[in-house]
Amino acid sequence: MTANMSVQVPAGTIVSSPNGDVVTIGGTSNTIYTQAGAQVTVPANATGPANNLVTTAQATGNGITTSALTAVSMAGSPTTNLSPVDGTGEAAVLWGGGHLTVNASGDIVLSDRLALRRVTQSGVVTTLSSAAEWDGVAIDAAGNIYGSGNTTLTSTSPFTLGGSLSELTASGVYQQLFANWATASSGLVGGGGLVADNKGNLFLADAANNRIVKFNLAGNTWTVLAGSGTSGNVDGVGSAATFSFNGTPDLAIDSSGDLYVKSLDAVRKIAPDGTVTTVASKLSNASSAIAVDSQGNVYAAGVQIIYRIAANGSMVSYPFSNSTDFITSMTTDSAGNLYVGTRGVGAQVFKITF
Picture 1 (cartoon, one colour):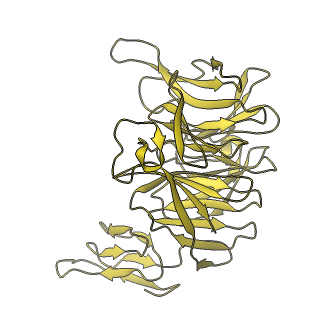
Picture 2 (cartoon, rainbow, N blue to C red):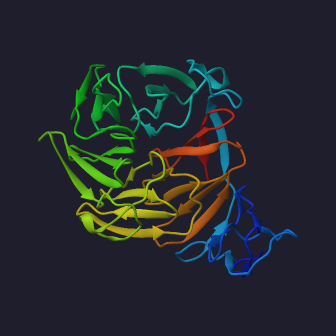
Picture 3 (cartoon, rainbow, N blue to C red):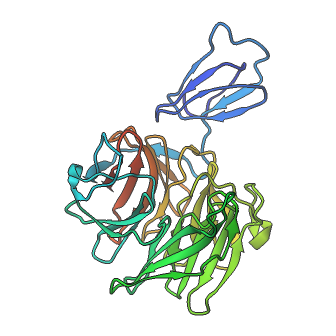
């Protein structure tokens, strides 16, 4: 298929995209968004009305182009993702699937199988803390590290989970914050991407409840900034907006305090007053990874593809062929480098330049 092309096909049709996505269409009246260069195959046994739409008009904004990137593996085995092992480069073993952030020294700090780990620029991996269930990770200006997660409140079945925040201070002291701020009998309560602003607040992409939660550290209070808790993808202010999170989504914050999150196939922006708008849509929904750099460029991911969305809405698509593993999290540093965490056959952290 060429750019901006659309075809009507029956159920059973197979769509293979250049980025590795393969979809077999089932049912009727579906719309499948794919890339230019995709192959559409209609098997002989695909019968029924041709009323499913396949289109390469895949992204909102001012157009999409394709370019190249440079990616270097910093740490983690490309073939093993079993019990984590500290070490250097590929000798270190990462479990993968956690969240990434960058400290003032340029080290990558990540959650990895519920522990807190660090990767230096030279690829040395060490474990910082196993004192809690670390999921989303954020660092404030003072160097304190915060993590989202949950704890088991009872030992009976069915057990209860309580959401909490963890802090590892710059001096190495661990403490728990906002213990049991949310509870549930099961699920991802307390989990999701976490970021810090410069005013003493933490923000969580509350995976279990499809909302953005704001924690005020000084006041020891929390409020819902945006999201009704009902699954959806509707823009609006505060609880009038809806999100549909996939797994434990990343959360990113820019220099103005605007937040960014991936909701299904869309990149959503949340202003400090809780106003939610859609930045880009009809992207691959295979990954919830998202990041924003100091220039305001927003990064999202699919299968072996990274999108960069500029402030004017223009988009560049970068094929990521360095690993067949799934991109699970992203973050940026002050120099504009992008860091990507993966999980699949192996689990690695990559440094990407454009």
